[in-house]
Amino acid sequence: MNSSLMLRRFHCFRATSLSSSLDSSSRKKPIVFLGSPQVSATVLDALFSESAAPNSNFEVAAIVTQPASRRDRGRKVMPSPVAQHALDRGFPSDLIFTPERAGEEPFLSDLRALQPELCITAAYGNILPTKFLKIPPLGTVNIHPSLLPLYRGAAPVQRALQDGVTETGVSLAFTVRALDSGSVIACKRLEIVDQIKAPDLLSLLFFEGSKLLMRELPSIFDGSAKMKARPQDDSQATLAPKITQEESWLSFDEEASVLHNKVRAFAGWPGTRAKVAVVDETTDQHSTLELKIITTRIYGNSNVQGNKSDEITFVKGALIVPCGGRTALEVLEVQLPGKKAVNATSFWNGLGGQKLKKI
Image 1 (tube, rainbow, N blue to C red):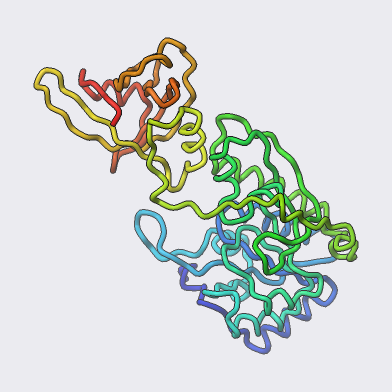
Image 2 (tube, rainbow, N blue to C red):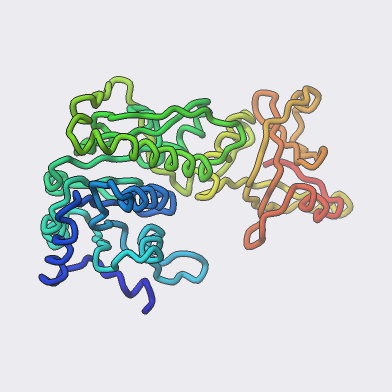
């Protein structure tokens, strides 16, 4: 059976199925995992592995994830990456919940019947109402990819890269109704490498977050985590609002460092785009070309930095774009609409001698 057909909007358990589930969890604390994108699967795998250990005192009783949606080029209705990963691991499909909203009463009723001791979230992507948060006696713990209270919100990794910070991290915190405002159990700091892009940094932070969770689970289960958890200083909080498609455009009037950080931050989705002028000097024809900017570096040649012209040149495998503040940006990879990404050399050779100018 197609896996997408195995997932309904939410599952109503048969009494026999629920009874057997509770019987199997009587010796171990049942926990419920909530996550949706592929990076969440790292945390789920860590929970599966830890729960399978001979001395484990918990098991994954259920998984909650976003409903199936149309994804990829074929626009087929597909389960969320976490749901598909769980199915591939042999997790029972009737223990995978996909409510449109976490406050739906049929879903909450099934969750209460499982009697979870603890809920764990990792990029679930849905607001948890008070009715949900009251169900697990040990609370709900969230893996958040920032050093809370910095970058609360939907896009902490992207906004941190966009701001050009050199350090970030991952926090393990209790979930409360206010946005990412719960007490912090533990955190892990990481330096940011200049060339790292958002998808890679996100994966790294959730990998570190899964290790942090495994380290702290004993204290969460025995209740000592609540005693040692550090309340956040709201006066130090910063926000990380959701990225929008409209933000993807680059303006070369800004400094090269700002543009480079934005390219790294928006890698994957929505990406970054720019319009350039193509000039055929033999016919004096001008046309506009839209490019997706894939990979960049800040160019350090002082001669080019001082060039105030609008001409885009090609130097040692990179397009050199003059930017604001007497800076310049190296563009190493680009992508034309409907085409595959190519390196700057291939793109430059395809111009056939035509000139490029920034708009």
